[in-house]
Image (cartoon, chains in turn red, purple):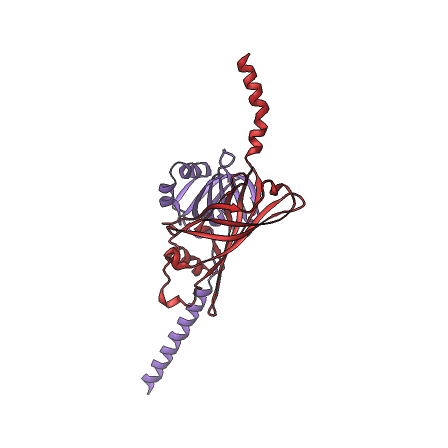
Length: 184
Length: 134
């Protein structure tokens, strides 16, 4: 009898346990970056970023594979992988951090919510703390997306750029991240 | 005088040739792997299992290599063909330069450059510059 009551109690509480954790995931997030100089503009796009956002703890993680960045020109893609990012040695870029300023339950209501994202970005074997403004958008159908922009300096991540092309690559690389989340 | 003219023409031809080569090389687009020989041939299930078990060893073995992966088409998302492995969240995501003519549920063999895996929401191996193996 005692066991039966326990099972019933557990069964009744189960739905609450499930709703207590509000977890959002994305597998086809977009990360683009651009390097703008008077000599040339370099742009690359990765549409296969994965992300997990836990709206109860505000923990945010996203991961991209370096070799999944697509360039228009083959030579740029080859140099990016082989010379600059050394993608066989450092295959991914990872961000782990917290979202601040997003009210609990906000993602259940249509609207645009500004937040601050702070965390550690690891790439090319180097970890740096970054802070940026992010925007969460919930559309009328309840679809949740998030985006943010920030810039990084290649030298901060020990990415060596040969003297010959140093004027072709910007000192600050602009990064744009956009995720469309599904509740899981 | 004649030698000088020949020399001048040769130098000019080399400069023009070099310029054309450099220009074409600079603008060369990203080609798919249709003409490349795969270093490994295996099933989607085995590839994902290897990454899920030992990511570091699999990174060293597969990243940047052209491999041939076979499996059932789970779904098609834009330019990506997602191969099933039998475990729902474990997949191989193959990116083409245009949506390929394959059907969901069919068995296919795909060549591509392995980019590695994201082991977070299940395990997803990613392949770039993909081509369907006829």
